[in-house]
Image (cartoon, rainbow, N blue to C red):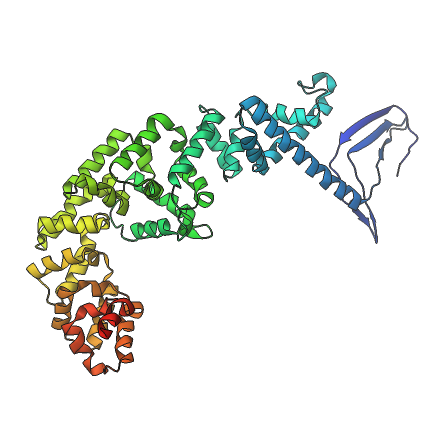
Length: 489
């Protein structure tokens, strides 16, 4: 369609316009595929002003399909160009270059859009001011634009690790002093040591949940950062069960602890790994330890040695057992946990627990060090109501120190279960002193099943109290593997 007017003093102006999808007039639709709109303006001798415009008609479906194919072609070409830049200019291997270029779609899109904007801008300015890209093909323009970004390919690499484009750009600036080849080697080594062992059953995540559950003291910055790291993973599909998966958690690891990317592999990471192995941390367990407390790797080796010695010397742990205690509770190296040690010891002394038994309890259940003494006192009050006092309390705690970490309401459920069988509070207290493990068991999954086992062999419920009083350990044994063989022998 073309509109013509008789006029004088013509002036032609060309404007760049995005494509129009459709324009409806009544029941009919006109589709345009506009890229350029030419306005022809003129001033008539009578003073009137007129404008003419020319439009190109097009089929919307054909235009859309053509645009989509053009976009895909450009993305593919850009991907190949980025890979070529990483090989030729940065020096990466073909495998690494291809992997990065194939896994940075948002970065690629940003580069393609940058090329288009540059082409459009240069068309406005005129070919005389083409900023060094006149005569270049699309592939060369992509490489030109990648170089203009000035990050040396680090943004593309970080996105290929699973980071969002914004996080990748931030971290690329954070590690601007590192070259991409060195950064790539660091990431490979970090993945190797943090995810050194298989975690198909999600055990690392279970340990993390337990450490979080029993933490009830003010914490330092290192533990706070670790908790934030856990929370990021917990918010994703699979939650903390995916903590041991490199694909699920590595991106959150470096987002939470970006300093890991600034460590020297030779001077920082390898000496720390050698030290941890020297105190009994098996290589296949190294990842579990570091995932549960990444700040270990951020500390200077000599400082971590000092913290390990200070923490384990207090509880009389010999060198050969250091690794075992550390694996049970890596947070024992944090300053807040170490400062809580004196409060826990004072509390135990007040309950007539001997130093030897205190050390034994902490070695068996070091999570006690993350619990506040006031929380433990709440449990002691409930135990005291059963008539367990003074020296008897000092015997119960070393036998099952984790009992102090129970919630009072959970403990009282077991008390009510035993009272429901006909026991008086004093007898329940006696059972507690003899077999405190009962009070940490699930009623449905453990205790009730033992009673069902007795009824299967014709034992009347009236005999349950006599059996349990005489042999309370029966309630915690595995019925099929322990009780049944003894019954049949």
